[in-house]
Structure formats: C-alpha cells, structure tokens
Length: 141
Image (cartoon, rainbow, N blue to C red; front, side, top):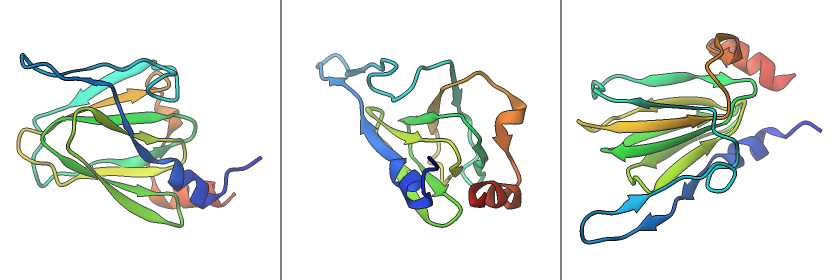
C-alpha cells in the first residue's frame, strides 16, 4: 500500500532522546530500533559550515535519516512533493526523523553548527534523487 503524501510529511517529526542531567555535563545516547525507528548502518557529521550555505537538497528512495544538531542551530526544509514545512533544530537531545521520499534541505546555520546524521543504509549514490523535477515525478507515480 502506497503511503499518501500528507502521511509522509507527517512522519517527519522531532523525537526526544534520553537526556541524563549531571552537574559535570549532560549525556544523551541513541539505541537503534529504540530511539530511532530503524537499524543504524551509517553515521556522519557536518561541520565548518558557511552560514549562508545550504546542504542536502535531495531525497532518498528507501533511506531513513535522523538528524541531530549537536551544536548551534539549523533549519530543515521538508517537502513531500505537495506540502512543505520547516523544522528548526537546536537541541542535542532531540532529532528529526526523515523517512524515504522526502526532499530535505538544511540551511540557516549558526556559526559553529555541527549536526549528526544517522542513516538506515550505507552510502549508495543510486539511492539519491538529486533532481527536484525527478523527485516530483517519483512521488506522483
């Protein structure tokens, strides 16, 4: 059964991660299939971001992602081909879950922003949809 457009965009949501407070510094941890709704196969992080630069601007056929802003802040533009929304990330104990077939772009970075991305699969160039018109065609099929 095909997931309808609005249902895909509604699946993009902020999830709280465990936050253990301590006067010596807080600790947050992530467990696959518990705190994120998929098995984690790849982790990468983005840093030294020019504040006026955008990142992302693509979708994935089957890949699930979870973005966590570790330091600073950023906005994530989400688009399912019909509806759009913007999510602001600035808390290291929260992450944004992005299911497949969502066009996502990261922008409006504070100076010193670092964000972490957890994915459900290894890097595979053919899993990306990098052309927005192609993305629109795929989500309408």
